[in-house]
Length: 196
Image (cartoon, rainbow, N blue to C red; front, top):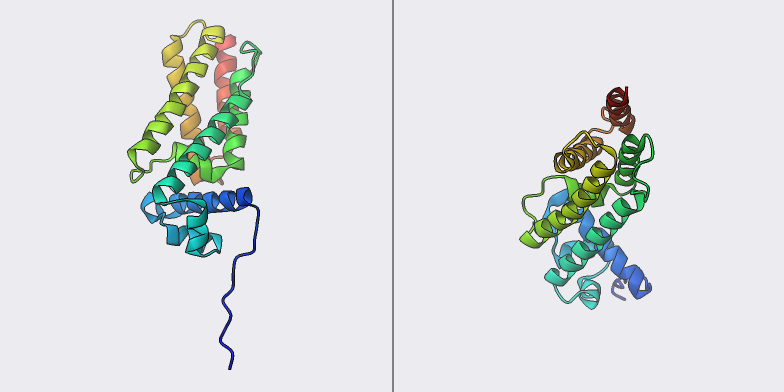
């Protein structure tokens, strides 16, 4: 009587496997917290065996470090892609908010890690998040200097970034109630009233 054959994960290119494993780790961070990310849990979530995970990442620290790097780079890239070169275009602030909330909607797990409180993340994750936020604040301050002459640019930058983060949190946690248009319409009305 023949024994049941073990099923193996299909062979895929190394970069595809790496992406699948990082995606599985990200899903675990978002749904169960950082401490739930073990090599075994990642393997199970990705539908592979633990040796497959160890074949790509030497250990849990290497996996989490790679996840942090990928998510930080992609989040920053997404934000910088929506920032125009011409910061003086009319109606830019509401458009930037719309573009940002569209980015959040396209990559909700990534942005949950960026804008939602996640106390069990290690210090390097918090440091990376703060580093990316500092770059975003600097760009927002440039925008405030170029367009919001009547406001303190540092205060305006913090206000804009905080508004974007709060809007993202609400869109992620209660999308039926807090749709991007509500924020964009409110910001449009506010900025239009300042012009008149």
